[in-house]
Image (cartoon, rainbow over all chains, first blue to last red; front, side):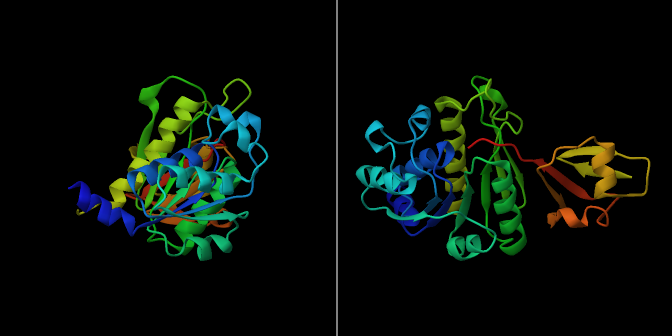
Amino acid sequence: MIKKIRNKLKNKIVGIAGAGGLGSNCAVSLARAGVGNLIITDFDMIEESNLNRQYYFYNQIGQKKVLALKKNIKEINKKVNVKALDIKLNSTNIIEIFNDCDVVIEAFDKAEMKQMIIETVLDKMPDKPIIVGIGIAGWGNNNLLKTLKTDNLYICGDGTSEVTDKQPPLAPRVGIVANMLANQTLEILLKNI
Amino acid sequence: MEIFLNNKNETFGKDALTVTQLLEIKHFTFKMIIVKINGKLIKKENYKTAVINDGDNVNVIHLISGG
């Protein structure tokens, strides 16, 4: 079975929009699981404050996130093809960049960007599964984290906890939701195996 | 009419509602939302004209920052 899973996953393509807390941890999880092709986009650089939850290291501060993430993934699983795009997504380039993906993962920080990618995919690529993370802030409350499905849209998280000064994003909860995104991706990719 | 709103049955005292009316009644004042009626995305500019009828499956997804 493990061979069958490996063979199936190695030909799959997953798009990840954002390489922050959700995106970096999700990408690493998918790479470890053996998903063969990852397209990752982000335009940010690594800051020290990111290290409380994002899959980067102290000596990578100041580097572009997508390039550092590609390096980290390659050190874990060198067989994964990583297309690292240092780019800001908009409603036009999303379609070109993610057109060949089997699944698109929304791992943005800002609500406006989440809205933009979800609307674009639902409107222009309605058959494409899109998995999004909503409600990841704070700590505790394991049992509030869940996945809601409506057609091809999957929403992982608690749906309500917004990042604020009093409720920062922290490694455990962000990591759980990042892995919920990855786990939902595998459920879709390994359907009918 | 009875609709399926965010995976729950809800009853309203009207035969039909526009998206704008539904958002008012439910006090969904959040700026960043995605609205779907029977799986179809309704864009913001169409909230005033898109009509929800009895039996419709409606999703109002609140988008909050953090990622």
